[in-house]
Amino acid sequence: MEVNYDLFVNTLFMKAQAKGIPLSGSFELTARCNFDCRMCYIHRRSRDREALMGEKNADWWVTLAKQAKEHGTLLLLLTGGEPLLRRDFDEIYTACKSLGLLTSVNTNGVLLDEDKLRLLREYPPQRVNISLYGASPETYGRLCGDPDAYSTVTESIIRLHEAGIGVRINYSATPDNVGDAAAIQAFADRYGLPVQATFHMFPPVRSCGEAVRLSPEDAAKAQYEWHKRRLGESELKARAEGLKPGSVREFDPECGERLSCRAGSASFWVTWDGKMSPCGMMTEPSVPLDDFGEAWREIMRCSREIFLPPQCSGCDKRMLCDVCAAVTKAESGEFNGLPDYACRIPRPALTPAARPPNIGDCCSADKSKHNSPRVIPKGLIYNFSISWRIRKCSERNF
Image (tube, rainbow, N blue to C red; front, side, top):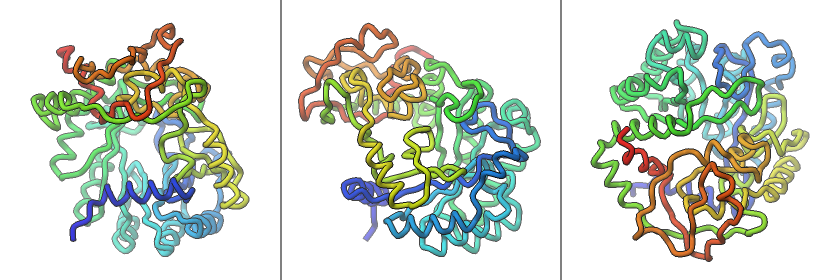
């Protein structure tokens, strides 16, 4: 019998959330990286002595993996920084695999030499996620400070694919590489590879760098063009027209809605210096990892006390918007603060037939429209796919 993998995983997460099981985890093995990307949320160089001295050793990570498995973790991501910079990466990776954890790896692809390829062939990962920052040496020079890396990264992607190892390309659009989007898409299509494309970037939440990102309007335009190339304009518009009413989460009009993602209820993040948080894009809550079980229970407790702004919960475009606690915190400095950047992202226009009664427009950069949030009746909301927030762009003749 054929199993719907996405449905299976979603069911697992629903049950894990209900029981407080940390089903999924991310180990940030290092903050260091051999690139110098301006938009990086950590931004530590490969020879950063402070970061190197603060890293946990392989025994610490392996012990943590064992504890995580004992508490129900099944899915594990090894990430960074650039995790392959660690000389003991192979030891950590093989130990996680031997524990039966479904292990994936995030990498920029530069250090995937023959030895690493041999390791991944012998112990196949669930997937290798490779960031492809551009489609030319010039773009890599502007964005990452290493023009020679472009050919190395693309060769690594091809070699992994030809070795039968699952690969996904990660693409983050910035002013420096948005012009390469079509070429990156064509490269992925040539080899039949999936792409995780991000157009609305976080500000640097864990470094002192600048927010190198597109304006909300330009990001929405780039996202629309991406989907139009993938689906064709007629199919894209047809899907947008197919938006249908659904149901909404309840929320407290005084406090707003609780965390609705898996962070802190079924997934966790461990930073390079040994602290647990709900998500890699959240600097708090953060708990020292002396004991996995105690840290996880504290993260769950703290996560239950996080609420989004009531103005977001009452916005009639809420279900077109993927604003989460990490976004509100990063954009406003507060979990219950209004994320102006996100509010400026063009949303699909709701047709009169689809608009529910008594819900007004409030998703706007104009804060005056957020003063009186509307409480959506129980069982009434829109279960829109986030992908179709870009419908508005199709009406602007971009």
